[in-house]
Length: 65
Image 1: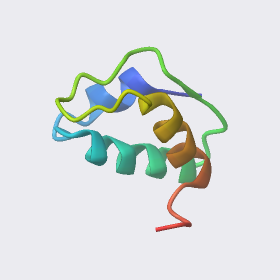
Image 2: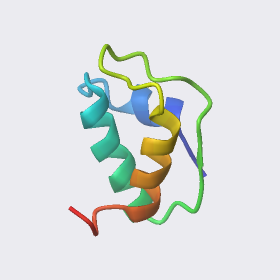
Image 3: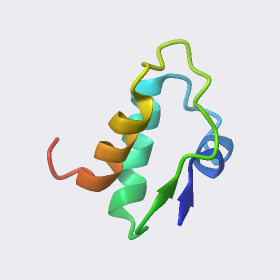
Image 4: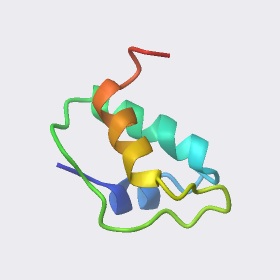
């Protein structure tokens, strides 16, 4: 299981929500079955529906880019 906090901590170079979304897509492609949203992303551009956006990114992975 991937945890959002682990992804954010292990990639300090990620500074925007769109970069985080790409990171979550890669996590979905890497074989993780689930993602846990244990923290709210603290980026200036984080939208209100951030959980839905990241869940969709994790599920579809890189296949729809």
